[in-house]
Image (cartoon, rainbow, N blue to C red; front, side, top):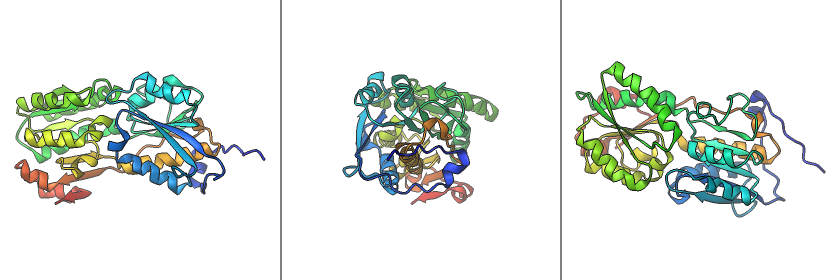
Length: 321
């Protein structure tokens, strides 16, 4: 009996209960990213979401993990194409760019891509077409908010550092929003760069040498995977940082403002299940976040000698004490 192809509209897709994917077949999908999966807690959100839809590693699912530190070279995605996986799951703009170039045949589900249209990776959100769909973190639209929050928690200094990875297209997109916001606030930005983890020590040292109020850490998968190293540098240089993801303040960073990454990965798993059941990725609308979270770590604030304004604490979704 042939499996029926599941064609879903933007509204209808959300209303259809998935149930369990057929147990008889062992599905093979691939993951490609710019960080070691063992240091990426968000992947547990993906696995949890897959389990909710009847896909369990070792039972009816095999995930082939391919990753490279820093920028994702083309061979990472091409390796998965050669292994002929059923679907490729990617995290971040560099990984999506590599996968898009590697295949137009194998379905691709992405998460954590801030500006897929601006990067030329999809044509529109409602009906992306082709073999790509996923979850944008829409981080470009909240970069200015992070700057505002940092200045609010560390007032009285008009200099702010910014850390980004120039190898990631999305860094430029975030800077395009940050720069006019900084001008309107009378803030002078100083940009430091880190392409690979070994660049982080020097980047923090250069940032701290300018004696800024703090540093805005742009959205970048490498900065999540190497959060322990970054937090140690934040403390060493007494450089208050605001991050894109909550993993960093949970691990000892000062604060974050952004989407719930665990939930984004979990939602991405729904698209994986839909496609394995027969849905066409190009018919599934790219989802955008509607809620953002503010995390503040009071223990770190104390270490850095910062008094967090009560009004800011009241607005926080979680305060770590």
